[in-house]
Image (cartoon, rainbow, N blue to C red):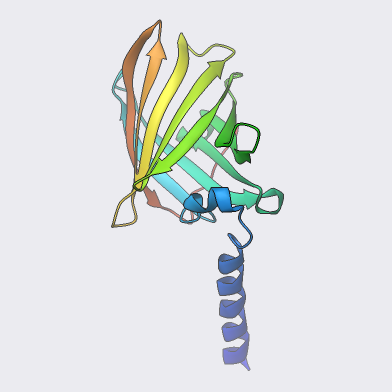
Length: 175
């Protein structure tokens, strides 16, 4: 009987994992490898030299019409929530990102040759940063490489570079 219970529990987990992306809007299917995962990445901000750890959790939401990503730096020192969706009016993948620092961003994403490229506008002030450009790609070993740059005081400056690994037990923390 214990074997059957264990097998049923395993089957339920497999089914749940399989349905985490079932029904994802066709315009968002490129994100499927991320949905249902928690990722963690250590980084050093090239502009400030400060190090940090980012934890992000990806999930399908709104019946697969959007993807929700929550993340936090350094166990809640900073965090945000992003909603990625298909903008049919603009015919593009768009997103809004809301932060615990009181500003928000909005932008668009493209996916080409295995690389996500995002360009976003910053609203509400963020130390002189008005735009962000970033690119992300999943590597063959399952890690995700992300690199960004910021438009700060009218000049593009290097942001940060992160290698994320899947970390199912990591937690997104908001303080």
